[in-house]
Amino acid sequence: MSGNARGGPYSTLAPTTPVIVGVGQWTRRPEGTSPAPEPAAMMAESLRRAADDTGGDQTRVIREATGLWTVETASWHYRNAPMTVAEFLRIAPPRHLVTSSTGGEQPQALVSRAARAIAAGDHDIVLITGGETFRSMRSAGSTGVGLPWTEQSDSVPAAETEPDPHADASHACELAVGAVLPTDYYPLFENALRGASGRTIAEHQSVLGTLWHNFSSVAQSNPHAWNPIDASAHQIATVGVDNRMISFPYTKLLNSNIWVDMAAAVILCSVEKARSLGIPVDRWVFPIASAQSHDHWFVTERDELHRSDAIELNGRSVLETAAIDIDDVDHIDLYSCFPSAVQVAANALGLPLLDPDRPLTVTGGLTFGGGPGNNYGTHALAAMTETLRKEPGSVGLVTSNGMFLTKHAVALYSTTPPRTEFRVTSPQPGIDAGPRRVPAEYYSGTAQLETFTVRHDKRGAAERAIIVGRTADGARTWSRSTDQDLMAALETEDLLGHSMRVADGHVEEISAVSREGLF
Image (cartoon, rainbow, N blue to C red; front, side, top):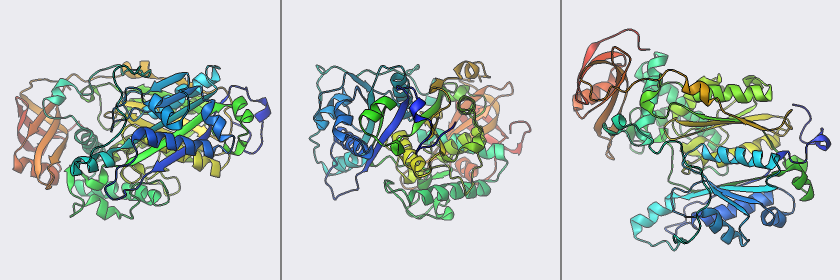
């Protein structure tokens, strides 16, 4: 790459080169019991802020948009969210209305799609936004206050969307033991990471506390962070009065925080349109390269639960496209719903986990910055855009993931134009060809303990363990237990890699003797 944000070869850029010109965020703080404006209204306001951020003709930026695309809203149902956002903006709906499918990688997928459409000449300006009001929804539910928000009938034409390639997120053998929620799966990845690292339980908790303390420190300088608390590593990783265990080894402060009222927006246009709108070049941030793929769809089929082939190959692809090394990346935001997601991504990309000079977040992450449904990625890109503008010529890398470390996107951005046209690649064929484990359904016999989690109730008491093992032939088993002694042993003794006896989906016993070869 060559040039910089305040000069360089902008005159030689193709007119249809895509560029981010405006970003906006709105974190609506709790105001008594009054509900937030509905999600579409918050999205509209974030777009107004993004238009203002361009420094150009704000009215034209909105009114001349050819696309209005929204991240799927999880806290309120819209048949056509972009149409409702247009109504709140008081504009005629742009000709192309899109709503994403479900997943935390969807904001990046929308941005990449918009960049390609602009480069192809199919769009001039694309408005992308998402918003959630989980906090107000919960407040309304607890107080019985009705919410006079938009309800669209079936007569409203649905916005365009792209369905996921699979209808189900979980395999039947996972569902059989109660694995349904992210709080069931990400702790499984976490304990697999501990096994691979060789750390004791105490050592690993210390690493998690330090990692998340670093994230909380970044949140304190983020004006849009929902919960920018000053939390020590010990406080984060240790069970306390306000920090109960959720699913071992994750305390409350090691979980993402979805109970927020937040919205964000990104505006992309062509270089030619940016010039016609009078947008200063010091507002421009270029999409450089992006890669999207998914790991084996069901967790039970993945070869190793402490790593991701998709993130590794996505990262390799974008760096090769941009002709740079990971050490050339100045700013990073790794999707951070749980610490395991950050560690898996850092390992896949070759990033130090606790580098004080290059934090792995620009927002503070989903625990402290806030985890607004599918829309965290829009906030991350907005924050990254602002970060890159402050350091012209720097490069930023953003990752995102959806479901259970399933769907992934990695993208590079810079104030410096790309050497070649923006490209979206996918290493999916290589991932699909990789090793795949067979589920050992209805298994009875011995297996080796691969990973586990213990779910706790709202009082902090252990209520159910989900236990994953491997049979002698390498198949994966899923079991459960409500035995209090066994759950206590899992949380206090280093039992990963030990032999266990399974019968009809229940763990009957875990041996005191470990076996070689798992980690």
